[in-house]
Length: 105
Image 1 (cartoon, one colour):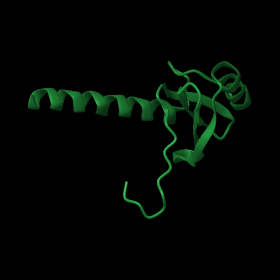
Image 2: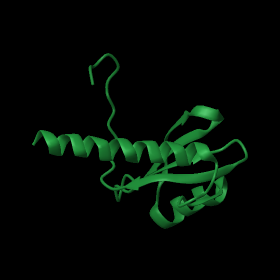
Image 3: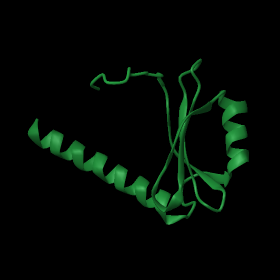
């Protein structure tokens, strides 16, 4: 059991490092990239996803979470200062959780 947990944590660690490297490298690599407005338009028309949250990452990159509250699909994109957006992650089962201010998470 302990060996399985260790191997699993190494796998997750590698995935996180690879994702961060790809987002910071500025290269498309295996990531789907394009003009920000084109990416956003496709997320909305194909998947019904709208922006749910936004933040600023390293290197002045904008990180945004788009999701559909109807289907549960979600997408995280990273936009570089030059206006190119890349898909960072996608998934299902999105839930909008609002934590009242002051409540422990």
